Length: 194
Image (tube, rainbow, N blue to C red; front, side, top):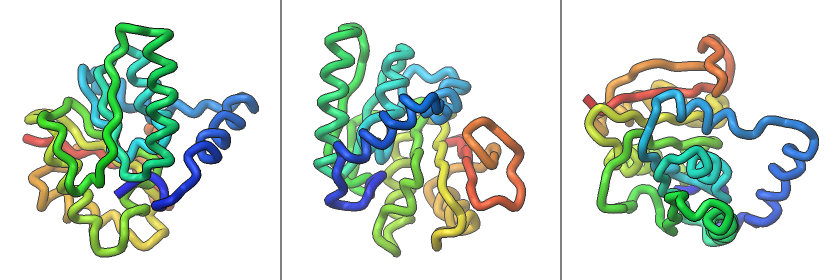
């Protein structure tokens, strides 16, 4: 399970976000949302090129980013090395792994799946993806996922997968800036491990 299709061009994907930044767009809404939980540790599940993980590490959070796409992760690792040169105290690592099989040997205050992660897993494996991410949510911690609802993976199915993984719903929004959830086609959903 990854934040981009297997074989995706990580450099091109990263360049797209660089172009957005140069055009004056804010690309850190997910990181701000995650920071609202005041986490000390975050797993960026399906981290892609590391955009969210890197921003969280800049803000002083211990971050592990995981993705199964080697091209995407190579960009994240390169950018992570650059960040560590700039901020040697940053705590950041990246892991090449399918989220369903991921085991980083610990749990986190927040596990975030930004960027439609559940939509980039093969059909029929979404429950394993959610379970793999949920395994890393510490007691009292949260799983946060943002994804489009009009691409074949429904909110009801996601809620069922979270319940099967032992997580309880907390809140739901239409955007990473916490606009109220309504009838739109995007959802940011927060679940807690009791």
